[in-house]
Image (cartoon, rainbow, N blue to C red; front, side, top):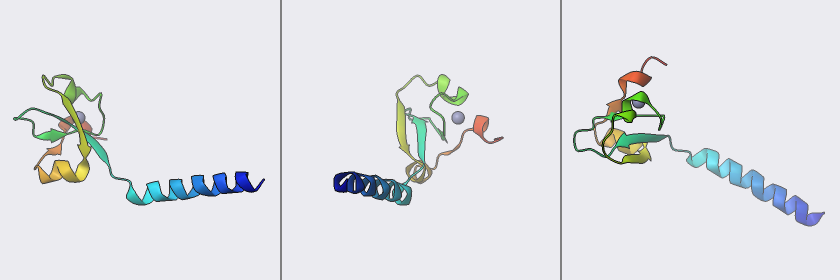
Length: 75
Ligand SMILES: [Zn+2]
């Protein structure tokens, strides 16, 4: 019983911690000409990417002066 309580507490703490540190994950095309970031890996704007799709954070994408993909602006 005590072990179960500990496990439950651990899960709660884990979830709470995740919420605090959640960063928005975005995807960019790893092309030197890429100027967009995408919230969805399967976005139409990424389907034409000839390079690797890079997973990054919204913060990083903005640092690289990337702007939100035009397909996702109208959400
Ligand atoms: Zn997109």
